Image (cartoon, rainbow, N blue to C red; front, side, top):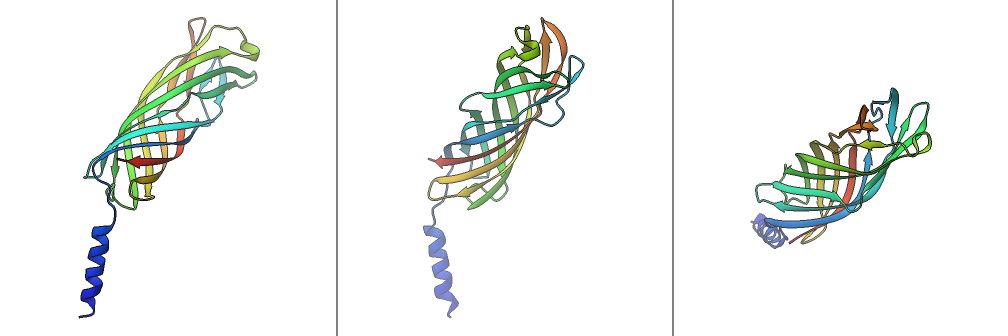
Length: 202
């Protein structure tokens, strides 16, 4: 039958196609952290926080059943400015979110196109907090934060071991703000982190 050579060719091609085995991967790319539009009330005024883009790094262990254990962290700290309605920009700060989570690849992690959903724990350390303009020199502080993170993304195979990853991640990020040790409100950052990276499995 004419189908026999065709089937044999398809089987041979599938056996010859490179496959991602269970194991580790490392990746690097860029990520934009974009806080939600309403960032809470601080000192009686409505707050807003700008976005920032930095290098993003990550590492994973992939299982044959489509599960992936992943850790992602910025290569350098994100920088943001806090603006209060009626006062303008009053606080500058840096933060470093580290997320550890589990991703599930619906079609298996070996697929050429591999969409996934993930959930994890995020720890965000806040540093270099300082008052500027109207609050220049003021003893203002923004506390560290932790919470859940959820992600949707997809991997696109680029060859035997390389892949391109695009991801949208929501981070539960709320930080208390103090002035001279007194609580003056909570910064409800709750950003989306949009990232694009290239990874290699080994």
